Length: 245
Image 1: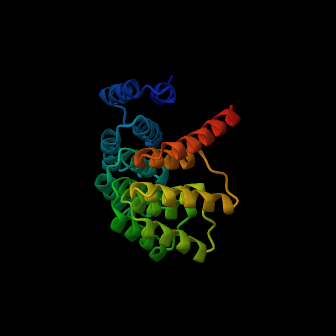
Image 2 (image 1 turned 120 degrees about the horizontal axis):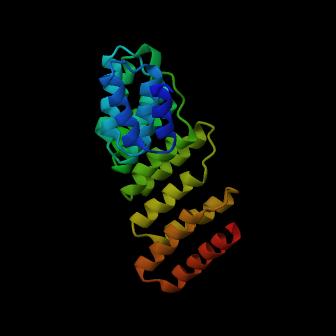
């Protein structure tokens, strides 16, 4: 049985610590890990929510003169993004730019934008979206929704609506997440009536509200003290939940 087989067996069952231990055994035995060894273990550690460790392994891979592919870089960036660590995520993206065989793609940019969005950093989110256009990548509906989410976390309704309109000007059809960002912006602004209005606009766009849509409006009315209207939307949420069972 090869070391890679054992490492993969542990990684595939989510045992990142044991997978790393077997990588250490491999090195102790004087056997150099190859591309597959690092690919398995970096992605496993990143998926288990330890981006800094995954990044150290990625750097060790590069130091061993083994070129990581785009999916390996992206797994680390997405792990940073999931924990709202924008600066390490952008640093990883910068290293991708220096590797001709693993240049950033839409997934890479979306992950970094997501990290900045989680930190309500509108300017950096917008900058990265605009950079995508410059390098020849096409921002998707999800990319725009992430920028909208940065606005919504700040309660910037006008900014979120502006990006909704920009999506339409790019022939992109806003999805439920897009409208939910506007609904959330209204809620953050403590304007439940406006949040409710945008939920109706979501329906008018022939989209189906999800749990987030209803809960955001309901919570907003609850926070404003309008318990009757809040209960109406909580009931709508319960109906949605029951229909999904």
